[in-house]
Length: 480
Image 1 (spheres, helix red, strand yellow):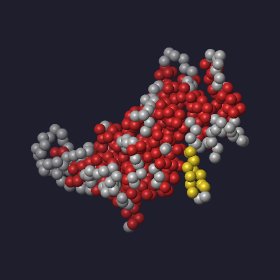
Image 2: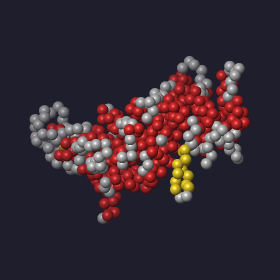
Image 3: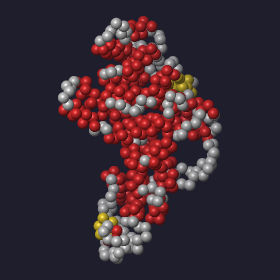
């Protein structure tokens, strides 16, 4: 496997000489020299019939162009060539020797790369203009490097359960760096998803309109920058999700290593990312829906939801870090059992609002469908769902029915309460007049007859409920 090394001193000197700006004062000339440098690296290290690996000095020069570049052209070109070089010249990879997989790690200047990446992580507070572009590209590149380092280690770990593989991983070293405040990192990433990715994408179109309507002249670079930002934001959101997935995967492995007694004091301690995410969603319930709307990875989305419910549904016992008698994890089937009757539903609604419950159940069902139909997640679907798809569908419908009876019909203490029947695919229910007329004093008159009332669900929740009903009816029809 080829790797970056100083094996072609003449090539390095000639190429690096392009960046020599001694005596050059015109910024345009410096820009052109950097473009020429990137083209020379691509031509020799990627496009040639006999490509030559760039030296680490050249890697550093490309990274600095990405970090410090003042034009969209340089930022995009340097990011792309770094990504292509990492695919061509792997830093970490598996090799098979005598039927045994071994991990090969290119360690040259790895520590310097970690330091640069730690600084990039701390720059997640996205600004406007080119600084925003640089920060987003740096973050995306960081996550790509972390993933490329994580995957081969994980492959080998599944065979050996050797925690040292991850103790020495780039992700673990970055998260353990004093330059990175881990809790702030997780919160900044959540903020990036909630504010920038969900709400601000549409603002780029408004920015372009403002630029055109202002008295200032508009050049091609201004328009290109405004047009590029929405796509960069979308990709940055995807990178945030990938980073969360990697960190939670590392935390899961660390937890397993703890139980096996493989960790020690040198591994330090930090709160798991999932715990921080749950705390943020618990104390800011308005963030639950937008966060789950953006976070699409089904395995961890379902895990987040199950852990959220477990804070209110399970009684946690005190246990040591390495206790083997851990309580059984809550499954989706177990969650739905808490909504199988009006009494149990009523108990949960004393702790969580019905609006939050509906959001969580709808997204849990979406994650369930994704896991059930993905062959790569067969184990996850069995372990975390705990029931057949038909059972889940029926239980989802039952849960929503009980939520409506409790929350919207105000069961608590009303003598006019009666059992309401489902009246069609729109899930309409009858209810007493005393619950329908706000101007009527509570229980001031007997119920004079059923009234039709529609469920107040979001479009996403309606879609989840409708899908559950369709699947249920199809499977029942097949069995019949």
